[in-house]
Amino acid sequence: MVAARGSAAGAGTFSPLAAIQRQFPGWQIWRSDAKRFWATRVGGGRSAYPQAEWAMTVDGDTAGKLAEALTRQEELAVKPG
Figure (cartoon, rainbow, N blue to C red):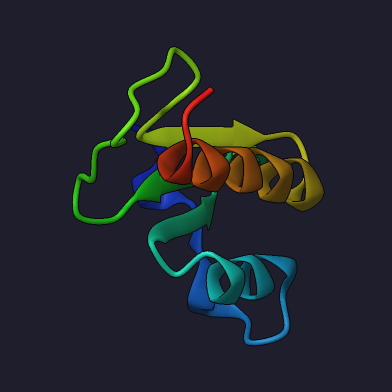
């Protein structure tokens, strides 16, 4: 996994990743060496309403796309369909 060599969210207090980390504390956020943005659920949680879109790890081409993916994942964890 490339993530181990990428940059963790806490590396820069005012970075876009740090802001996303504050918004989504249940996720480990990082940027890979390939310049993609990634997030993995902390604690291995499972959805109360399993759905095809629910994921342990999500990614995005930009910090904004990652935030959108995380917002969707948080919605899936709270309500069905």
